[in-house]
Image 1 (tube, rainbow, N blue to C red):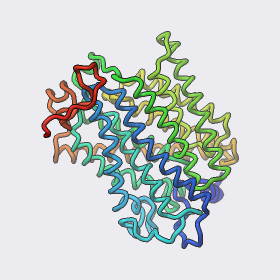
Image 2 (tube, helix red, strand yellow):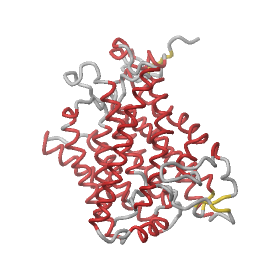
Image 3 (cartoon, helix red, strand yellow):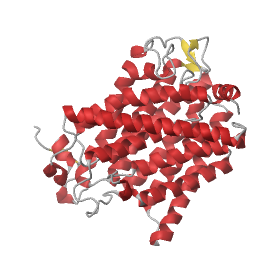
Image 4 (tube, rainbow, N blue to C red):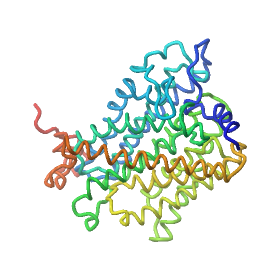
Length: 436
């Protein structure tokens, strides 16, 4: 598909990426607006779901710190998105690299529409994307990064890396959007960005004490399953909500968001069984999350049978990336790069290879090349940018906790509380230390 027709198709299909400019509001479509209000709430639920997913995979002595990095991301990014993040990503009057400053403090949205919904609803929906993008990175640095250092890095990352990348891909002015890159709901903007940034952060911080000799096993597998279930539930709003309307596009996105993770889950269990003889619950949860990641950029651009292919191939690539993680010489604690970065890259490229199945693309070769440019641009911005920001933060605040705090767990040292009472086998209420 040539650039001009592809941009026209994107303007119609990629509404969730901010392709439609703000327009004076006549009357918003009540059905579309209701769907978007629900979708925004579903996407917000994904971050607490991620907290359970990551928390269950960590050690019991660091479960609260692990979950707090996700919860704190809600507050941190919520404030920054209001002040400047939204306008840097979607503000009118910007250029190819960054949005205009007309919506600082979310000013100027009242009485305007984005598509058929109030622009304020669109801004809230996109805020949920920015929140979980930062929370995803935390999985690579759990059990050793100072909480304050993570927040400082996260704030800078959200404004200086995430917002510009969102503008590149989803704003009608962005250079990747103008090029014709397809990313319906965040495979490039969120998952490749978070995965690559996570890998860089793990490399800069260094490995956990004892890695790779000491075993770091999940302390609460039911938490992992609960978190994965909440993620899948919320992801329906994440992908289908990116249509910005209750329409056929949203219906297709929801359907592919069901079938791709199903294929990925079975594929992951199959690889586990063939390699170790036994499928695991953690493997099932990981597989479905990988399938969600892989289908995200393509969810409204491919047919259900193509979604099955994307889920299976995404799971295969991520499974073997996890097996090869030590070769990267970075202790990505919860396999953020293998599961989000690798699956995001596979999904972005397969979007170009399979978009023809719904007529969203006409020529596989040119679109695949465009997708590759988008992947390389995302990797370059997030990789180099994250390295620079981490080094800057390291000058201001030590990035890593002292060894004794790492060994004893992060919860008491960072938050003066524990997730479990040791005396009752870890099933009691939290213990608060140092308070009245």
